[in-house]
Each structure stands twice: as C-alpha cells, then as structure tokens.
Image (cartoon, rainbow, N blue to C red; front, side, top):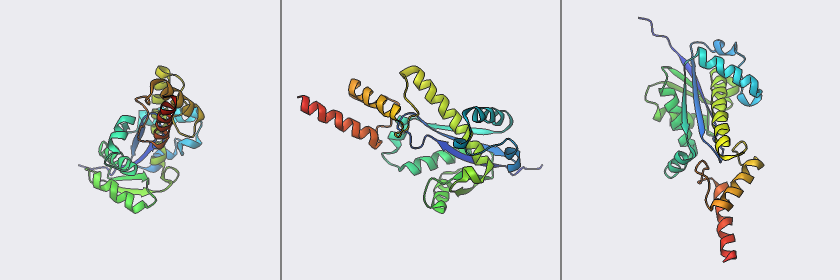
Amino acid sequence: MIFLKMICGVDEAGKGSVLGPMVIAAVECEEMDELTALGVADSKKLTKESRERINKTIRERFQYSLVIRTAQEIDSLRQTMTMNEIVAQAHAEAVDALSSTTAYLDACDVNEKRYETTVSSYVKSGAKIIAKHKADVLFPPVSAASIVAKVERDSLITKLAGEHGDIGSGYPSDQVTIRYLEKYIRTHKQPPFFARSSWETVKQMMYQKDQCSILDF
C-alpha cells in the first residue's frame, strides 16, 4: 500500500475583528504546483470575484477544513489564553481535520519558531509544522487557505448584516462598524452578542456609556 505524503496550508481571517467570528481554513494538496495553477494569492490582493471563483474551485477539487471561533468563544478563551494561543489552537484543529504530514502556517507571533512550537503542542496528528511570516505569499497552500477563510468569513458577516443591519467589515478601523457598535451600545446598554467584549474597542465604549450614565444621574 502506498501512502501519499500530503501537505496543507493554514490561514485565518478575522483575527483582529471586533465583530463576528474568526475563521481558520486549511487546504490540502500533494504538490504546491496544483494550487499555483489556480492563480492563488494572498486573499487581500484578489478581487472579491476572483476570490469567490478560486474558492469554489478549491472546494470542488481539494480537501479542506474550516474551524470557526465565534466572538463569544473568543471572549471565553481569552480569560485563560492569549489571542496568539487561541489562533494556534485553531490552526492545530484545522490541521488535525486533514491527513497532511506537513502543514505550512502563517506565523501569528513575532517569533516564527515559537509559533511552530506552540501549534505543534496542540497538534494530535503528528504533522510537521512550518510557520513563516507572510506564508500566504510564500506558499500556495497557505494562499489557498487564506482565500477559503476570507470567503467563508465574508459570507458569515453578510449573514449577520442581513439579520442586524449594516455592520461594516467588523474591523475596528471601519467607521461603519464603529458607528454600528456605538449606536447599539447606546440603545441596548450592552454590546451585541457577536461583538468581542474583551476587545479594547468595546471596553472603551462601555466605559463611556457608564460615564454618561453617571453624568445623567
């Protein structure tokens, strides 16, 4: 019996978002050239149409896995873990869902080797972990994973917007997102369930809300 040595790339979307989930994707292949031929690249450098087209092809032709951490799950985990540890754990979970012997990751730590060690401590499959900065540019499987993660997260954000109104991209740098949060907290006296309450952005808004309540009193 011949056992193929599969490789995979792992990346996430929404790590720094204040609204909505973080999505981690892993894409598996035999040879990196298989994905290069699709025109994969860092998802942020592709148009929405290109991302969706390539995402569809990846899902049809390659094994992949998705791990989703909701805002509430992230808030809960942050009570005992750093954000980098949360991402590392999710990266490992995405790797374990496939049969790869080697996994390439976008390092979520200034120290690449430290991140490799952290992810390896969570991996149960025994896959070799290689973490590099800018891995989504260096390795086609990571580029592919970045596309799948980005498209999946965009879909989830679109669904939230359909249910709750225009929430923007969900990132603190987006003024639409900030205005939505400010209005929601002003009206409901608490953040929406899909906001990361452990984020400084939300903490500051809640503090300002409390200050205004004291002044009004």
